[in-house]
Image (cartoon, rainbow, N blue to C red; front, side):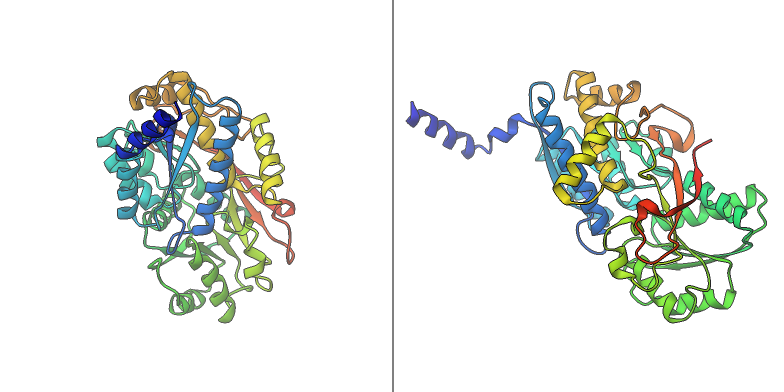
Length: 388
């Protein structure tokens, strides 16, 4: 009998079949190396891995275990597309989640709409990810109009009139810049906006920052991702733009543990966008995840980890509701269902108008560090904005 088992195993290996083929595969495409935001990708990965463990510990899905297949997009759309093709074609995943960089999500969705396996973006905000109304495209993140509306409210509250935008030339940077200019016009805010762009592989921002300094803005919007965020802060400090002029970072990078290691002397005073505060209530699932995360990593989870976890839970619930691993059945279940995730609020993906198609939007916060080495969980919340 043992000999037969060994022969069977050898035969399966010879044709590329393993015990893992009996699992349900979920793809996770995230940036894990430069020029992508590798730290952001790792946070999503941490959350997704704990999500897989928790679902499997609770009995799995449809009598099978979930299996996570992780790929590195490097923030390059072509790499993301190649990863998606491999995840679907070779690993036979039923869905692909992750997507930190908007350009990667947009590129993948153009292929996904033909291949039919759904995507669930957890931290990519460009409008067209869902505004194109592709059946395969879902998202649990703040879209450009909501994020911009939050900082427009902040700008109005502060009485700022001159705004400098320094933004990367990606779908993320271009989208947020264009949306800011559009809302300034449509809302008749009367802001004087300076628009400065840069390649996300750049390392020297001094020429752009000197232009900004000459403009004498009331606020600088730092719309970089990954390393450029930190370089812009440091080089702005070198030329005397910081701390004299307030700076708002366009996402939640300052919540990460390495922020104060990188900015021990110039991190104070920075404003930044966030999508979660520990003051916000967590669901039972969210509380269980936060406990497991802290036990494993000795720190509290940030939004990226929470949303990475939430994506796995939502997909697991969607598969159960569909009672099938067929992509079309999963898409139908996601569209029609109500799901539990980390927030203490239901998650749905309606076939809504415009950018809100298949999109659940968390509240957007503007957080302010008011003293050195401040714990992000204790920082002041300047604005809380929810989709109207």
